[in-house]
Image 1 (tube, rainbow, N blue to C red):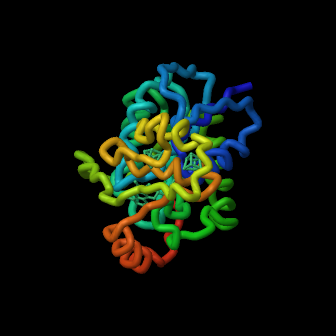
Image 2: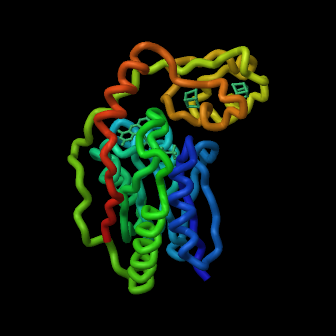
Length: 252
Ligand SMILES: Cc1cc2nc3c(=O)[nH]c(=O)nc-3n(C[C@H](O)[C@H](O)[C@H](O)COP(=O)(O)O)c2cc1C
Ligand code: SF4
Ligand code: SF4
């Protein structure tokens, strides 16, 4: 029996959902590396199958997630590369993921860009991935499984440009409403950038913060949020510009 290794960075949980859905189409043993907390070296074998999911951040892979993934090496290990985006643009993220996996000795068999709710602009792609997305993801998974069984590699061209677009940090502020905070420190534990001080969850170091949304997503009191004029102004324009449904794309 092969070992299906799920590897993902998923601050607001939809990338995890997509990777789990792909993995559910394989009967094999399953192992998980959650890059929000897994930051170690690892080498997979040719008996493993890696399902690697990353969210798109500003048309690229999130920087820390990329650094963490770079520590996981393959050994001609079959890999499925997935980027998950918020119905705006994938830009160079899928190409970057496929390139990185190949550099690290994975045999990329298939790739996909899937659409999920936008983790910053909550009015975009609400409820996605939905039933129609899941159906397409299952179909893709079955075709990919057949390709792995017959030792085939990726044939399709992945869209994107090299050099990749420059990564642009979003200017939005993240704040914490002190009157709502229950001081559970879940946000401190999950933050991949150590941007929330151990002894003060109300504070956020915006120079360290990547705006990944993990702290907002995990907060049981909804105390953490994007705030500020720049965010409020952009939200209106962004939600109207990206209201038209986009579909997932699959590459075999
Ligand atoms: C910092 C940041 C930048 C983002 N940039 C993009 C983008 O360039 N294009 C896009 O369509 N969605 C973008 N999104 C939305 C995420 O890609 C999308 O919501 C993704 O599904 C989140 O995955 P998660 O639920 O696993 O965290 C961005 C989200 C964040 C937090
Ligand atoms: S403080 Fe910033 S980097 Fe840390 S979890 Fe929150 S959004 Fe992500
Ligand atoms: S997760 Fe929310 S409630 Fe818990 S410490 Fe952080 S801000 Fe406060």
